[in-house]
Amino acid sequence: MSLTIGVLALQGDVREHLAALTSLGVHAVAVRRPAELKAVDGLVLPGGESTTIAKLARAFDVLEPMRQRIKDGLPVLGTCAGMILLADRVLDGAEGQETVGGLDVTVRRNAFGRQVDSFEGPVEVTGLAEPVHGVFIRAPWVESVGSGVEVLATVGGPDRIVMVRQGSLMATSFHPEVGDDPRVHGLFVDLVTQT
Ligand code: GLN
Image (tube, rainbow, N blue to C red; front, top):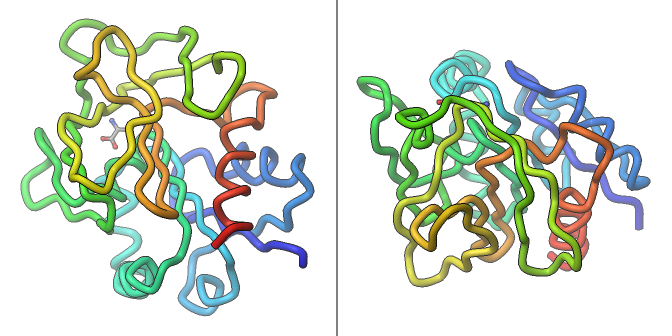
């Protein structure tokens, strides 16, 4: 069976995610409209600006359809702003900031920002033999997780959670689409295949 994975293409680093998925042999498509959302087996919510993406998702009438499909079990990978969008609860969000939700976590937006805006470094990820090179750009972290959520990676302490999974939902604080290492996308493709 050939898989189709969509990348929500309203704002953010869409092209890089499409390229990473394509390099894994997946049929990767941009998603902006409800009809395009219907056609995918999995979805990536990219990094960018979570408030902007949420507003555009509402304007393009894909916010509610995404919520519904996630309830129905659609696998989703959220990266950076996408992690914020996938979270049920946001700290330090903008006034009235909406999320798509589904992932039973509390994320803190721009969490690393008080010390350093952006940084890079190795991140050990459960399920991968070698660390990935994590690129963090005004990144959120996960501050608390519900009981069904597995912590896959932390940086600089156990309470700085930067990668999680809950069923077929996966999220990273960092940008796995930057660089030529599609292993995190590979973990997501495995999830989509199993779903
Ligand atoms: N700080 C951004 C937000 O709140 C996320 C940054 C990113 O995706 N690189 O949406």
